[in-house]
Amino acid sequence: MSGSSSPYWWLSSGGHFYTDGVGETVHNSLPTNDYWRLLYAANNPLDTDNGYHPQNIFRLVTRSKWGNARQQVYFRIAKDNLSASPNRAASNGVLLFNRYKDQDNLYYTGIRVDGYAIIKKKIAGAYYTIGYKKVFPGAAYNRASNPNLLPKNVWMGLTSEVLNTSSGVRIRLHVNQGDGVWSLVFDTVDDGRYGGAPFTQAGYGGLRTDFMDVDFDHYLFKNL
Image (cartoon, rainbow, N blue to C red; front, side):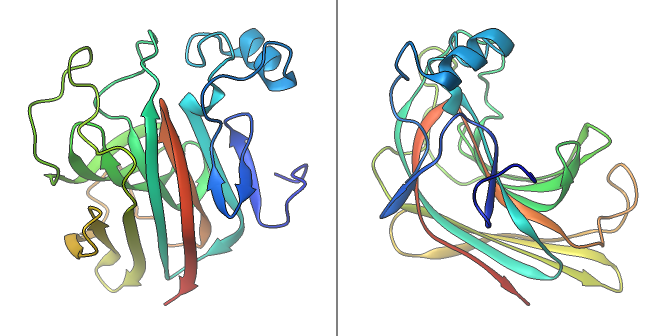
C-alpha cells in the first residue's frame, strides 16, 4: 500500500485502474508487451489468462481506515471473461470490502454471479457465510451455459453499513438492481458465531470484482 501513487487507493490486484469520468477495470485484453501482462503471466497465468486479463482478480483497497461507516458504489458490468480457470465460479461477483485488515481478515458484502446477495466474513483465510439470499431472478447458474445472472451495461448499486453495537457488529446491505430502487437485503449481526470474534476495529474499505470488465461511479464512504 505504501508504494501506491494514489493518496486514496491501493490497487492490490488487477493490473490497471483507470479514472476518466468513471472508474474502470481493464477492459478486453492487455497488449502483449504491457508490463502488467508480463508480470501476471509470470506470477498468476491461470486466473489472468496468461496475463491478458488481470481484471479477473481485481482488488481495489482504500488507503484510509473506517470504523462505523457507510460505503456505496454504482457499477456497470461490461462483459464477462469466461476464463478456463477453475476459480471462475458461482461465488464470483461484485463485492465491497468492509473493515479490511488484510486479504485474509475482512467482511465481504455484495452480489454474486449466481444471483445471490452475500455477506461473508473471512477470518484467518477461512470464509464464513453470514447472509445468503437470491435477489436476481433467472435460470440457474451454470459455469458454461449461464455464467452470470447479473445484467450487462446497466448501472446497479451496492450500499453496506457496518456499525458496532452492544450485540456485536451490525451489517446492513442494500442493493439497487438498476431500477433506481434501493432494497434492504440484509440487516444482521456478527455476534461471534462466525469463525470467531467480530471485527470491531476500524479497517479499510474497497472493491472486488471477479472475471469481468466493470465500470464504477459515485463511490462514497462516510462515517455513521
